[in-house]
Image (tube, rainbow, N blue to C red; front, top):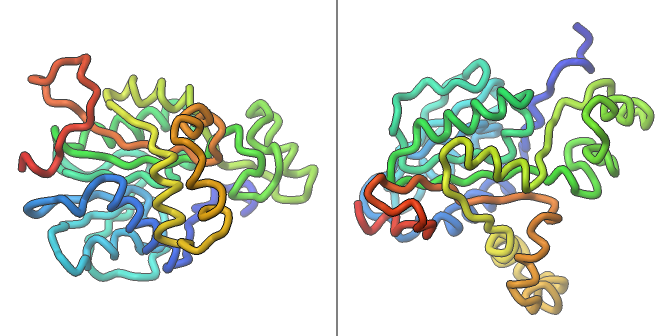
Length: 262
């Protein structure tokens, strides 16, 4: 099979950026408030940088597993790695306190495979656990994997032709989601969820670029309610996930105090 018609891993191999990403995830999930050891799973580990960060955390407290369909790791210490085939996860039900899916779901395949990816995250997450999921927004202006404007706006059957027209490859092997589609799928998988794009934006600038003028002079002064209104057009959709215990009323969508109750 020609190389340009096979799905690519699209792993981010820039290790400093993976450390920044891990610190952002740590903040968004409140992991600095944890008590006791936590089992953490990263699905689609890529370079291994995020798993390495948590597995070698100076304060300890994480037992880390990582899986991927391709072994692209650059760092190996602090976690266990399993190479998998497809979306099934080789772990028992309710095995993890923390489950991470960072820019993975757009690579796993069609609707059924995306649904199974979410179902598997839900299956291995413990009650009172938490998850982090990020995916490119279908309606982003420039598609991030191929750096091509409007690529994911087209109907699926036209996207590879658009890619070929601009000489960027033969197969568009990603399936970004809109906010509506993603939230529908999260609900179907049994998750409670909260879009945290504004918190993620703040964390990105405070961790990676605290002196950036666009943050200091503009973005941090935009009222949070404006960011909420623009949630469907952010280039990346970022969510906290959780599963409420059966004893909690179905209408109570507040994120539980995950680590205080351990």
